[in-house]
Length: 248
Ligand code: 13P
Image (cartoon, rainbow, N blue to C red; front, top):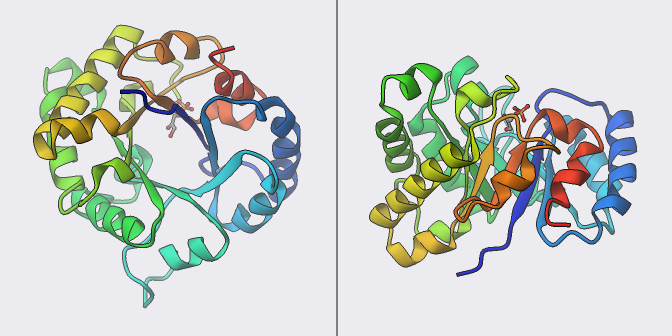
């Protein structure tokens, strides 16, 4: 079964309206012939300007979080309808930085994921183990729990993108090896098969994230179960175009 590759950037809390527009303008001609889907997930305040900057290009704009309620007393949060109003298509949910620093749990990941799907946004649900968990052999347990709890109640799993981001590889320059990433993502696909159905699992896009860059993207993307990347640091520069064009 062929899945269309999907390379997305995660700007995190970086860039400004000016630097963001400049980068999109420079990236656009470099990625226009990409064979994969391309998105940049940007800080909420930059969304309107980046949507405009990306107009007429194949770069889609995504958000970095979404709240589960339609509206209400949730100071600092943003609803799916607010994102949709500007033409946002993707939203990152449950990034490890949100789990680590902002109290995100499998339960809140689940609520945000269901709200995104309800609004017809494509959630990019992040899962991944800590270094300590990798070293003590509990990676598969952790990922199973994150998938089981985070995806509870999802009707059509093919509408969800999964990003496997081992926490020890994020921003550290220490990428998972091609084999480690492949083996773990194959496990994730099997688990999705168990939770949903084996046929559905074959359709789900699963990205790798964690120090993916212009140098290591080819090897990672050559793995049979790796369908794309969620790129942090390298999405803040033109290296992102090299990753998008990994197959050229
Ligand atoms: P880096 O590519 O900077 O390691 O970040 C990965 C990431 O967290 C993407 O969501």
